[in-house]
Image 1: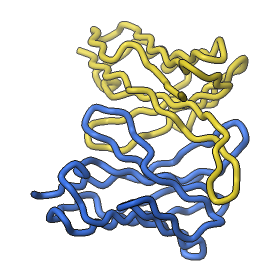
Image 2: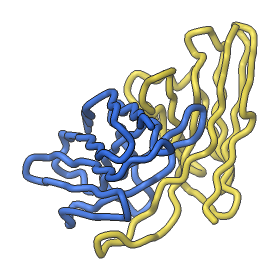
Image 3: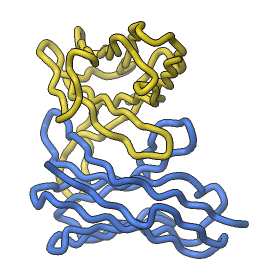
Length: 114
Length: 122
C-alpha cells in the first residue's frame, strides 16, 4: 500500500519568515495530494491540494509543488503569521469516482513565533 | 454545503462497555465514508472504509469484530467500539467524499471531515 513520509516533524519559524514542509510517497499511481491544517482537538481542514498533472499550485501565501519523478511534494507558507501555528498533514491518494482513500504523512507541528 | 457531523463529540466509558459513534453527512449523500483514528500527537490512521449497503472494508491490523461499522443509509455511518479498553482511547474522525470539484483540469471528490469524537476508556 501507499506510504507517505513527512519532514520535519516540528518546525519553528519567526513571524514573517517562510515555512517549508516536505513529503514523499511510495505509490507511483497516487495522483492526488492534499494538505490539511489541524488545530488541537479539531477536524483537519483542507488548505490546498494538487493533482499529478500539475507541477505547482499557489493560493495567496500558500503554495504546493509536486515532483512526480522523485515522488515528493512540498508545502510552502510565506510571510508566516501566528495563526499559521498548527499541525499540518500531507496526504496522498488515487482518485476514484466514489471518493479517495487518503494516506496521511506523520504531520508537522508548526510554531510561528511573534 | 458539504458538512459532516459526528456524535457524540466526547464520550467516557468504563472498560468492557461498547460505544457507538455516528457520522452524518448533513447536506449531501455519501455512499462511502471513511473512519480514522488519531492518537495524541500522531497522524490520522485509516481504520476502514464504510460502504452503504455492503460490508465495510477494513485496513490491515484493524479488528473488524471489535470495530463494527454500519452504513445503513446514504447519510449515516456508525462505528461501534465493542468491549472498549483503555488502549482504544483515541480521537475518532470520519470523512465523506463530496463533489465533484475541479483541480488541475480533472474532476474528483473532496474529503470532508467530521469534527471528531474523543473516546476515553477508563
